[in-house]
Image (tube, rainbow, N blue to C red; front, side):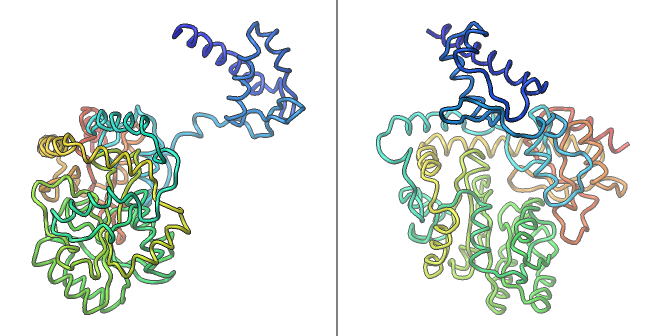
Length: 463
């Protein structure tokens, strides 16, 4: 049976290939009618069902169109996209989208120490497969129905317990599931700011904060980052001068620096926020990387003016889009309306899948093993970088990033362009810095540095 199916698949692909070649060579012009199913089956010495399958797949790809009662026709389309057009431009300006575009659009042959996620083999792939099989067998609406606006209750209850372990006390009725951490921040920006409002960020900070805030037409002001959190004197001055509505930060395992918020800095920050009526979004996406929980603004504040967001993309799967927002109850109703307006409901399939994986005891074992593996990788990569003169700004307590200073005042943008020409994606410092003051820095993802080529390319680019 398997041999027959494989053979049929090969025949379908052969017919599709023949049609595509005739379209590409212009033997079949845009709008031209294709041979009938019977005629092509006879000409190709295949069954009519094979031709039907081939035509249906070509129609699904947009190469041809079906007209009821008339047959199949070549689609009116531009010339096929070339492989050169499909790859990211090497000369693209280095801006907040640069690293994301290079990392997401490049093929699997490209090494990506500049990206922001773990390699697939670092993630619990077998647990995800097991959960998918479980969902596929289940009867009910998990595979078909919309999710509720707040999202799957059992997962929100589980998140409530997990947040409580880090001192953030949020009932399930204070938690909304989202499709990602990015969507969570997008929703909160829709809720909390208007075009022209000022928003504070760290300098450096996660580059997509810049991109997202610009999409909301916010005025962005940055505050220098220190190993203990934002520079409090600069933070206070920015509040006095700019009257921001919002501050977005990572308090635990800061991206990109790996810094950890200290308790004294956290207390001073929250006092300033209260005086200046500042709302804080605390992005806690890296929480599960920690051995010992760092201070959380949401825990110290009691979710009064601090909103916490997170997701499972870093530790479970980037393909399973599921995040959350923990927020005060009286803000939640408007957030529900926004969710219905923009996405109608939480993704039920992803939520069900996450619930099954996280409930499994093997997930906690995965996290323990992951933390140990990350510690080893941070140490080893730090040593390898030191051999070529690249030094971490600090040694993070947890996480996958090293924020590194280049030797001799070198510009990381030049290094990144040279590396990209050799199929290595780096993350130059100024994509993270609103003030453009991090030209001599590089964010390195230690989990993406297993191939020695990464260090060879960086060494060569520094010469």
